[in-house]
Picture 1 (cartoon, rainbow, N blue to C red):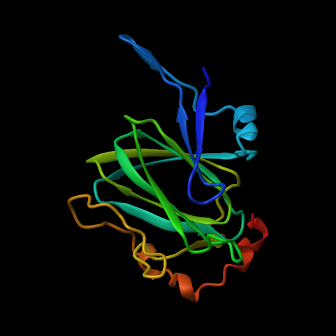
Picture 2 (picture 1 turned 180 degrees about the vertical axis):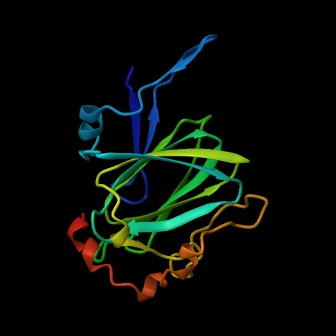
Amino acid sequence: MEQFQFSQTEIPGVMVIEPNVHGDDRGYFMETYQKDLFAAAGIPAEFVQDNESRSTKGVLRGLHFQKSHTQGKLVRVTRGEVYDVAVDCRPGSKTFGKWVGVTLSAENKKMFYIPEGFAHGFLVLSDVAEFCYKCTDVYDPTGEGGIPYDDPTVNVQWPDCGCAHKTSPKDKEHAPFAAQDFAYFARYNP
């Protein structure tokens, strides 16, 4: 049996990965990454940094990107549930400005791969969520960028989490999608 099932989304390069979970009455075991299998599926990324966050219900982190030290991300949830979103910011791409989302949870164990050239964000749907992700480059605070989570051009359809969204002050200051120059992502066009 295959260790992973890789599914392309509506945006080429953005994938949902479902691991093969081996379980019995003692618990479960699964692989969460294997370089050769991911490369064979079209994800040749080399990951250099792992991150983890803990958030409460209604927290909306994003939509973020890095202008320098651009990061591809392999994300998953180890506790709780989130709605995770990738927005294509690659000028000239056929899907420029389009978004795709997936529910990730500790229960479904799905992973989401977001390549370089995308904005990324997530909304916590459960009381608490622990979110883990691998990145293809190191974090550079001088290269931070983002678009508003409620940008009318992108128009992400966030699910109802049963409470008001909680965002950081910094996330409320991002320029609208239509006002941004995404030239730094042009090199990632498919």
